[in-house]
Image (cartoon, one colour):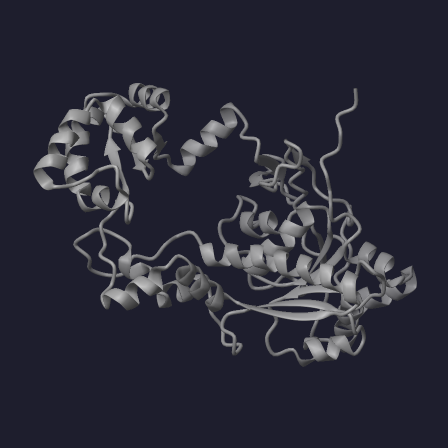
Amino acid sequence: MTTPEVARPLAGLRVVECASFVAGPTGGMTLAQLGADVIRIDPVGGGSDHQRWPVAPTGESYYWTSLNKAKRSVAIDMRSPAGKELVAALITAPGPEQGVLVDNVVGRRWMAHDALAERRADLIHVRVQGYPDGRPAVDYTVNAEVGLPGITGREEGGAPVNHVLPAWDYITGMSVSTAVLAALRDRDRTGAGAFIELALSDVALAGVANMGWLSEAAARGVERPRHGNHVYGSFGVDFTCSDGNRVMVVALTEGQWAALCSVTKTGEVFAALETALDADLTQEADRYRLRETIAAVLRPWFAARDYPQVAGELDAARVLWGRYRGMVDVVAAHAANPLPVLADVELPTQDQATGPVTAITARSPMRWNGRYGAPGAAPRLGEHTVPVLAEVLGLGDAEIGRLVDSGVISRPTAGSGESAGARG
């Protein structure tokens, strides 16, 4: 019996992406993994993020190839008049499933929405910005401005603690794909195009506001206190097992709290504390207020058991918990028993000494009818320039040859138009 294909609901849709770093490329990758033909356009030689760390032994960027997998890569000299015309033509190519642009371009008048809309009135154009007024920003700067580093870290305070994960970039990227799909829905109904601007600073402000954190600050008039790994407003903190492994244990609900008390056999102790301290530990607020006392009562239970025993007993009791792991541990777990959302993808450039270089990357986390889709191949910069220009714009060999000779596009390499393979 043939295994059914994983759904590719966006098959047939073509999107042009002119965006660097995280937010725009994440939006494009999301659409590409759902089946869209996403054509990423870079300058000849690569943009500012083409060699961004982390990099493989070959010097190739794990970062760039992973965020741009499943896309077709086109490299064009966008400073030349001919290059500008090629890019504008790709963006505004006719057809009901074309005319979609994702970019984060600043200062290119020829790529302004009104200039492109003159060529295609129903253009869908999603522009990622730093600030709504066009000033630059990145995740780490907007995160600082919304106050999160000031409430992150150990209780004793001190300098702000920056986060590592560019969360606002990722949320912006998901918002990009949502904006594209919403605009397509509207165009299907009305025939109208759309110009959608999405500022990273707005995404960050909306995020903290929608969590109620700005309302809390307005009502209290002071910053929320730092308290290390404790979960704010409920109970959750890390514990150390006898073998040095650490686990994070959380009790958000009354049932989770009851499970934690049951497995650690601390129910009577906490009942006595409730009487002595006039508390009701079935309530999140009281668990938060007495978080240090609760943690002190629970620590000996964890300290008396090694990790395997802790894991077994917590799982049996249905406690909400997780193990602290390093990324090396995650890699080892994937090597021993492949994690289904991850995939091993060969990079286009090989190490002459060792052969193919493999990157660990991800499929779309969306499971269609219970199945993950393919991750998509990692492209080589400019790999698809010639086939895209021929397919989308109908350029012939002679015209493409003139573009190569004039430096508007790079000379095709052996195997151009063929993608590196993806496994798993």
